[in-house]
Length: 400
Image 1 (cartoon, rainbow, N blue to C red):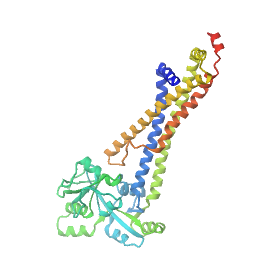
Image 2: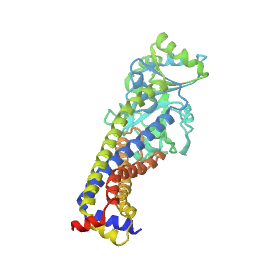
Image 3: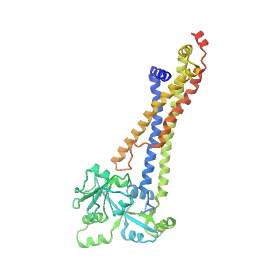
Image 4: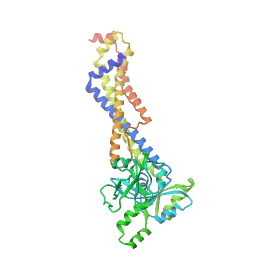
């Protein structure tokens, strides 16, 4: 304990050098912490939202865009597909379940999704208040939407054209909230759900001028995309090829596209980890130089400690303890800094109704971060500690 206390005083005696070393270590550890926390949450979010979805069917375009728009609701869909084609697809023997999704409007930046109750059941979400919709123009708000927009059962609102805020308001067709979902940690938290017929009613009323127009629009009804679950895994070998080659629609396999996406995100995370590793190596070099210089400056102090009965190992431990103090303090600051940065990014994403990201969810892999800090500081202190261990008292006294 005396060694720890004395080493801390030595650090405090050189505040500028200690602060620089602490800053470099903290930045490196914070970068690594941020990557670990964000990567874990993004991966778990993808896995949670993709669970049970074997295929996404939509208009021709980018498969990745189809997945991002249809599953995670963080992109614009490539277009619409005919309702008749979707019904024909649902009747195929390979399909166990097909959930239609109709997009196009929003409220306060939150997307309004026309679908069926199967969409809620798919994510095993439950109601926190109210009931599910029973007719058109009734809606159920996700937990995040209800909190941010203040929507509770009985509240009325008007959707805006487009998937972002600022579009034309459909003032003649207001929605009424009949239920609010409990938080599920899934994509439903940031959506407003309603019957598919509601979406058709809003847009047909805005376009139709007479009965013949309404009939024509009803015959040409469309949905934006469909989420498909197979009856058998064997369908994955032939069904997507059938959709892509034999219909005007496009099939995107979430497993394939998300693997590609995670690979691209992995490049970015590897770059950030590399930056963190470079900072740690720079910090190790800085710690080494600082401790080596400190040992040379304290040779008289070290000789005095030896004369007072301190063993060579005790003197070497004093140098190592300085490095470990830096590592311990930097670990705390680095972990807090990484989580604070993740929280800041999560706040920005929440404002954009994008992927949920919390700064205060701890990951098991973070346990290795203090270990890495201690190992880095310890390695940097080995040579200075050995130099202190080899101090010759008689030679130092003669020099003095």
